[in-house]
Image 1: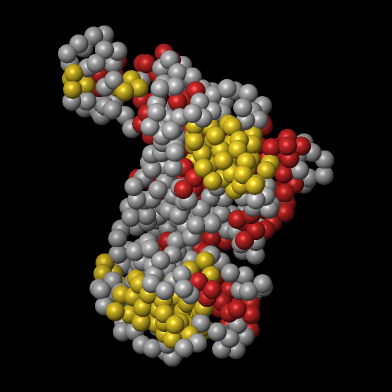
Image 2: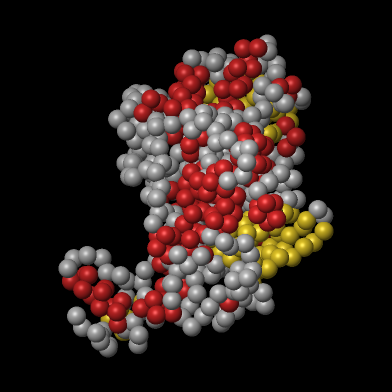
Length: 550
């Protein structure tokens, strides 16, 4: 093979000194009809384990490892005697802490809430569709088993969200190494590099991270060798407004809008009993809320429910039924479809909400359907907004990030999880290379790594934590050995899947049109706008299910 391509073109330009290897591989690959190495995506280039590896991986004069958020040739890393900061003490954050402890690296776990698993506690009444086998990280379980008195839950049992906290996260927080590392009631406000603003590059990879936070109402500051952001997205819900901004009047009427999954049959029963509630959203959170409201309607007179979705295609929420490898998830979608088809709720498809207004003692919701025609729903007492969440990026303003422009996920994951393309939520196994940023030593894990995509499973986060911590430890072989085995959703199999209107035996159907009436007609009407549904796609490797708090 030629060793010198002086003057040859590499990625459309002359090969700079020291980049011959890339250009040779590029030329040879293209000559054989394969894709050349080109200027490889920095988001997937991954860390270099040595200066020599970084130099060898240079392409077009740009070291790929440096672009991927790792040390540049001739550079270094922050002092190894500093801890690795983990933001968030949910299942994935504590899994990252467990992997750090496993490798003898000191973690520093910063949790805004007053308890580990704070986000899970907010939906503690909701039964997860993942059994225990997918809900406990292996390293965390091993360390718990080394402590006396902990019993591993039945692998096939179906936990409530609160059970995860009570039976796993809180016991794990009492493990001595974790107890020393954990800082509750510590809300991270900003992260930067010591002595380096966002613009300055030379020597940046050697500078420790500085993490500023409020702890019990007082400002504190921590130094770290690396940062793992597993803070989740549950605390930043999407608004009702179809355009991504709050609907007009949404903030003014926030006291009557619940974001997430209310405890309809428990703590929040009085809020919904005997009232008309509009649930907005087409995911599993909306399904849980609707099924609970339907149960409440059986017990409390005059309890009525309406369901509004933006898309007329409900393939994802109805799911794969019996074909779903997680039976509880399949049953959830099947029960919701039966509720809609049984005429026990008012169904409004294609609604894009623009305004929430007061109408006497009730609320009126205004918007448009898929054809731009005005839609008005009045007589609404309460609204449940289950339109998903988005990542809070405010604390990351001084870090160099590479995000998907639409989803705000890590850039490399964006094309794999984009719901505009993958209606099944397919995602190939991934690890540290897809989770890195141009900021050396900074990683996003858990549901926050997926940004606005509604396709995350807790087990995915556990594998992310294993891979990323291996990379931080310098064990690139283990970090690259991504092992992700997720249960299939069944959504893209040959099973019967429901659209809206048309045939319910097609995954992708076209919608029918029905005229909207007033609030008095709550007899289970199906309302949809015209239009042909998008393709349901093809499952590849493991199909990732809808989001669980992590």
